[in-house]
Length: 355
Image 1 (cartoon, helix red, strand yellow):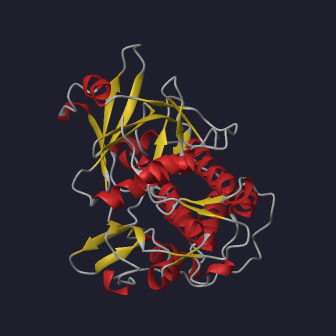
Image 2 (cartoon, one colour; image 1 turned 90 degrees about the horizontal axis):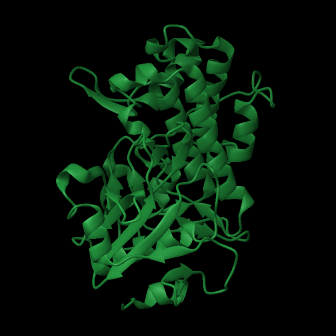
C-alpha cells in the first residue's frame, strides 16, 4: 500500500494495519481498510446505501465482515489531488488525538492509489438537517428537552476543541448537516475536512475562505482571517435554527432572500423573542429558557467578533450559570451575497457549500 507524502508525515502504519500518530501518543488507533473491504461492505457503493452527500464526497452505510455497521466517506475523485489529500489529512489529524462524547468517532481509513476513504461509527438518526431547520415533518418529535440536549452537546464539543485540547481545533463548517445523532439522540459533531489547528500563540490563521453560506462569519468571509470566534458565529446560527425550526436562509418571491439572523435581531429589538420559538412545540417549553437560548444565539452572531462569547462561557449562559438579562446584544453580522466573500489566489471561494 502506497501513501502520499503528507500522509506519511502525519501518521505511522503499524504491522497490525493500524494507524497511530508518529509520536506514539495516547491518541486513537485507526484501522487501515482495503478498498475491496469497503466496496464489499457498501455493496459496491450502491445508491441505496448512500446516506449523505457533502462538498467533498458521498457517505455510504456499510456492514463489515464482523457484522458492525459503519459509515464510509468517499472523497470525490473529481477534486484536484492536492486539495483532496489536504482534506483527507486534515480530518485524520483533527481526530487522531481527540475523544469526546459529542464528537463522531473515526474508526479507520483507506488509501488506494488516488482513492481516499474514511470510516466512521454509524449513527442511527442521521444529521439534524433531516429534522432542523425548516421543513422536516420529523421536527415535531423534537421536544424542548431534546433541543436543549442537542444544543448543549454541540456547545460542549466546540468548547473542548477550542479550549481544552492543544493545539486547538477550529472546525470551520459547523452547520445542521454536520451534527449527527446516535440512537439516543446524542449529538456528534462530524466532518473535519476543513478543520484547522491553532497553537496558543496564534491570533488567527490566514486561509482560503471555506464553509457554508448562512453560517459563515462575516469577518472571516471578508478577510480570510480564521479564529475560534468564526466557529462561535456558526454555532449561534445553528442554535437559532434549532430553537426556531426555521431555515437559516430562504427565498421569498416578494421579499427576496430572508435570513434567520436578521429575523431574530428584529424580534429581539421588538422584545418579542419568544414568538420565534418553533410553533410545533405548541407552547410546551419554558419561556425564560427559550429566550435565553435565542439571546445566546444572537450574542454568538454579533458582527464584532471580540464581543462573541467563548464557547465555555456560552455553555454557562445556556445553563443559566451566568445571568444575561442585562447583557446588551449588538447588531449581528451576515454574509448576504457571495460577492462579499474574499476571492483570490490565497482566499478561494471553491470551498463553499450552501446547505
